[in-house]
Image (cartoon, rainbow, N blue to C red; front, top):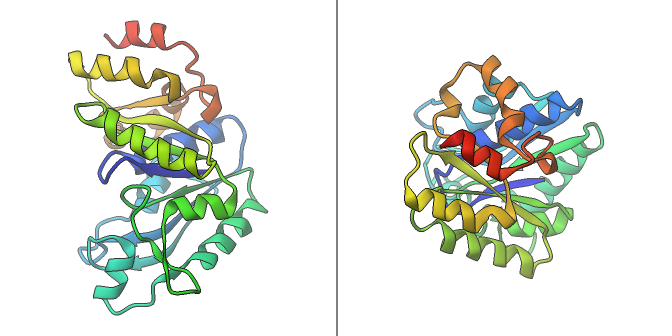
Length: 234
């Protein structure tokens, strides 16, 4: 399963951790794979490090790292490092799929960000990886203004490639406003979860216990009624 987003900084890593925690609570063996990690020059924890801290997957792997905070292909070029090849990523994910019940592959930025190169020398994206793997996708979206257009565009791009997809709100505000409730109503037909804003900063034990309540059964959670959830969140 691929975890992509409508944009950068929408909460993909915390959503990946939440799905990991919910799946492991359901008894699944989970691996998390990050094909391309960028922005490593400052020494901050990478996305897999964050997922490890919050959810402790059975396996966590980063396939390629680049110092500059750019799209992975651009970051490889700027650093004069070899770009990640598509079938290297495909093989790595399939290797983990042989040993785990669920493999989560977290992208970088949005769905069509250039991740690396094909053997032909053409760029590949997370959409290409989903097609190559025959994997479904989770689209992490914002709660606020602008999310409907960005989410619809991402879902349409996946649908054109016959990639099944659903949506998780990456940071549901503690004090939602009219725009958030309106967006929620429009997103519900595709919605698979909503992670509270700031969830990545809570105690890992609390995170793991809480995660199933943020996600629907399609993502191994227990959230089964958005009306009840909305009443409890208001």
